[in-house]
Length: 296
Length: 320
Image 1: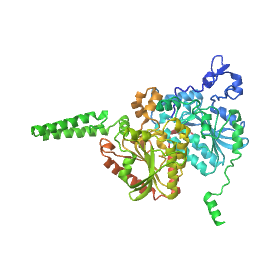
Image 2 (image 1 turned 45 degrees about the horizontal axis):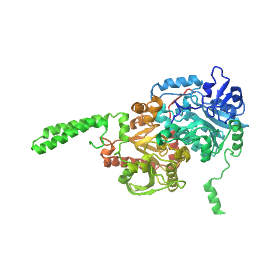
Image 3 (image 1 turned 60 degrees about the vertical axis):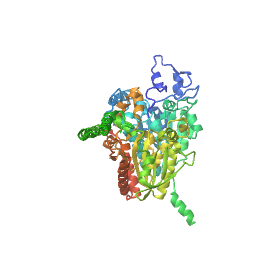
Image 4 (image 1 turned 90 degrees about the vertical axis):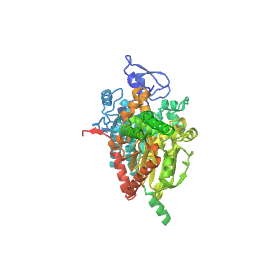
């Protein structure tokens, strides 16, 4: 689940941006010192090792969609606290903190837009909001985004970055995995394409549901992707994890993803791949096909 | 009761010991202790009822993990007249942590599957403590599709700490395996009944629980994360597991209140392991009742209802 919460040595682009001098940043992956302006020009990718810094959900909208084509939807859906959950802090207070920090109601930005003139329905997870954790609002907004894809005969895209399920919503958060899966099954029945893009990090309940249900699964370089977080695995098996374990390249080697895509080529890649996936697909049902063959 | 008793059962164990000692004494000394015995037995009975009528969630976690609690294959023995275990995912291996097979249940042919824990050390290791690898989920999906093709209803037993978090599990795509089960189970055209018999550990449990009916034994638990894992992350301290169990609301009655689970099945006083035969009888009645209803539902309607059920899950505020 949300294993990254506390000790992710993960990307601190957000915080580092606010350093007093703010001109130079260190790559968390290779340690290279990078000039901020240059980094921004490179869409927050390290030109030394190719590591992709974490960026905000709205940045992916800018990167992926035709300029000015995005229409945000369901922005008004807000989280509640059904369990009255309290650990060292109240969940209700945590939500307020996340909202103040991000200026968003929840850890997801969704809506419709165009990629090279082709309409798509899109959802982008926001890691800066509680580690992009999957709760009731995210589940509902993804379901609505898929529904829009079906209504408009459009492909559905999702950009993932999440530590996993939102523990503070208990079993309701686990059920969001089932809820989104059910809606994606309908998208599948409608023969509409679904491309899932994995960014740093994508783990836990998000990984074990929609992130890995894509017709095509793309990943940014060196992103941490996995079912269990590395710390949990290390504790369970009590041995050192191999170099590069659970990074995009590791997943590619093990046949788990279609392509590793540099952020700068993300739009072009998605657009080209979509050109092979008409929506809806022109299909003759398999059963009909089989019968037709028998008759001929 | 003393064997395998839990910390919170100690007061009961003490009285039972006193009853035992008194009986022995009476035999040795040839005394009449009927009245005292009666009193003690009444007291023990009352104590048992008191303790087990207000179990905390953490106490239920301990019962759900009790080493003597009946496991999937124990119920298979008691509930079916015929069981043909079927092995392997056709891709990599067989996973003994998730058993699947054809079974005859109350005269009906079904596909039955469940997580399987081991009783002794050797068996525990072989069953990987009930934590399945991707091949376990892929085997279950292969057979669910077969059940779909030949119209066999599916019954699943949930009893896992979670899907296994290990290097090989990641290499072979644990995420994808679970994700694929979820999307495929949404559209399986035969009835699916999931029964949480022990631990319902997160995605590893859900992967065979996207069902038309989800029912739970009274002292089983079902949670997004283990209380220990949640405590470690949110409290920074695994020993706060008890608090996490309360906060997560993981008991069977909690889940019914939250609208996630359809029915809670009562266990014998002291838990399922105190009377496995009685527990199996309860399961039999419940599963049969739900199967009788679901098997009469048209497949399109079945899937539509299953989908609507999961699509309605979640609590949020929508001002629009």
